[in-house]
Image (tube, rainbow over all chains, first blue to last red; front, side, top):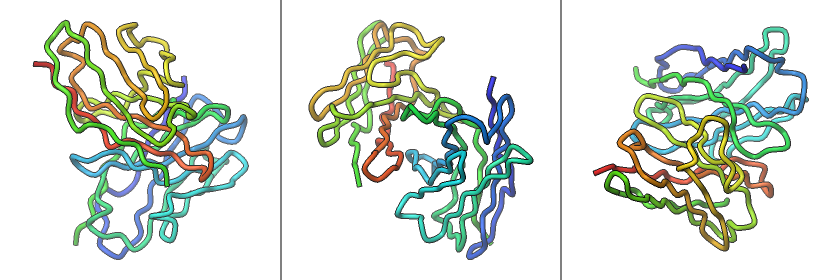
Length: 120
Length: 108
């Protein structure tokens, strides 16, 4: 059974970089045809897709965040990571990591989510 | 970018049928997925590829998709179905995930 678990600081200061890691268990992050995604949800609001990385390392990002986002793979640790620079209070949200199988277009496995608050 | 539109809220009495719509330009040409999210929890996939149910999802959950509207139908609604529901597609032209704004289902 595949499991995803987000981790990282719960509090980030404005203008700094938010960094989160998603640890994948129950399967290799670098084998197969998988897209590894980050999705966020501000309190009381809807889901927003942030971006994805393929097992090959290729990435694509939401245009609204593209200038500030980097997603990377660490195959030695079976993890993928999110970096979001120059954060503001508007980036305060629950951040989820999720998997999409290559031939599909839905997210089949999700992490439990982690709350990141941007505040001084 | 591709936009999905959902009604903010739907209310239904227990035992009745709830229908939650998801509108998008020619959405019938895309595969639509539906997630249920209860407070404090991660979203759970309840319908994928318009009308398929993942393992463990009750048959009361069904979906359809045609033209400019996809619909999630929940039959014989129970109190435990009260949650937020999100539709989602993958916009292949931009290679991006897209979510609807979400619909809060209230069981009266």
